[in-house]
Amino acid sequence: MRVSGCSSVLGLACWNPLTGDQALDTAPLPSHRCVITLTPGVAAVTCQPLSASSAAAQPLLRINTTGPSPWQLEGVVLANHTNADESTVIFDGGTHHLLVENSVISSVPLSSNGNESLVHFKSIPRVTMRNIAIYNITSEEEEYMGAIHASGVSHIAFDNSSCSRVSSAGFGCLWIQLSTPAAGNPANPSIRIRGSVLTGNNVNNSAWEGSALHLGAWLTEAQLVNSTVRRNRAVNGGAFVFSPSFVDKLLFANGTLVSNNDVRDDKGTNFFRTTGAVVKTEFGFNSIVITNSSRIVNNSAFYAGGAFFSGSNIQRIEVSNNSTVANGSALDGGAFYASLDIITLIVSRNSSIIHNNASGRGGAIFTGRELTYMRVTGRSSVSGNYANSSGGAVFVSGDLYQLEVFGNSTFSDNSCNETGGTAWAAAEVAFQLWAEQSVSSFTMAAPSAT
Image (cartoon, one colour):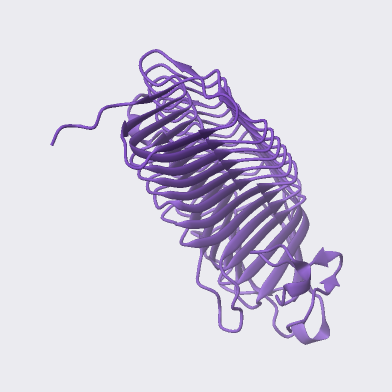
């Protein structure tokens, strides 16, 4: 069943993953509602159709009979439930939109299959999780994975939910493998985390990445809205990892707090992969937007990108509307690191990039090639950043074309021990500096002789 406009069912609002405009969304409403309880005392899965027309198309569940018992199954159809090498619970197709709500997964053993999780959603285009509590799930075994796995899905929502203290070798909370949209569902692949908390999760195996979210395949948009992501840790990539994945738009909005996430290899065997404590992708971003009083603070990567790491380009970074990126740290790029180019970086409307530091280059920002355009405006600030080597605020390995500071904004009080207290660029091509307020220092290295 498809709807025009944005009708809702059971208080679940429809949503457009690109714009957030409910009036334009034509997504199918959920056909089924399921409740999962996996705790030491209770193991139950209950599913019910939400309309008479969906009653004949129950989602298939596959149950790992080696997991907690007894099972209480109501209103579900079972298939292959004797397969002990699968996840504890598998939702296997049967619907275009599944709602899972009011569920608890806590203090139970992880799946004995090294390639699987406790719950797996398979081949369901749209999965909405709401009011889910996942906590206190750990394993010392290196082959064990984490809590939730979704494969063959186009849209994931994790709303008003929490995932905390999940520790495993493969991933922590969510492992999402997005697919291209199913026929009749033209919207682009997306994930939304709204009103949720992901905290204290850990991945302890350097072969895997992303303690809160590991996402594969091309992604149109990832939204974090009014959510908290704190104290997540991994050896290789921090809280969120998109691999292999190009991210069109990454949005932090409406008071989202991302703090004290860490990527570090205490064994010293994986130094060059300890990158991106908040978000890591090897394939680049079209845009990173941090807006509406959101804060990215106190995050740390041992090697590169104290908050954000891109192994390719970042087309646009925007920090706006009373938002802050602060107190990040790394060897290179205390807050942002791009292996290739950053095309546009805007700090506007009472926002700031402050007090980040690098033990090497680029206290706040590092780019391996060019920074085309940077603008600080609307009573905003890039200040108090520090690099032990070069580029107290910004290090550009190639060309820095244009830097503008307008509207009672400041680009000052950044420092380093070598060259470029505020910014350092290795070459000059059509460089322009426009400063209405102060730019305390800028160093342009002489071009190499050819």
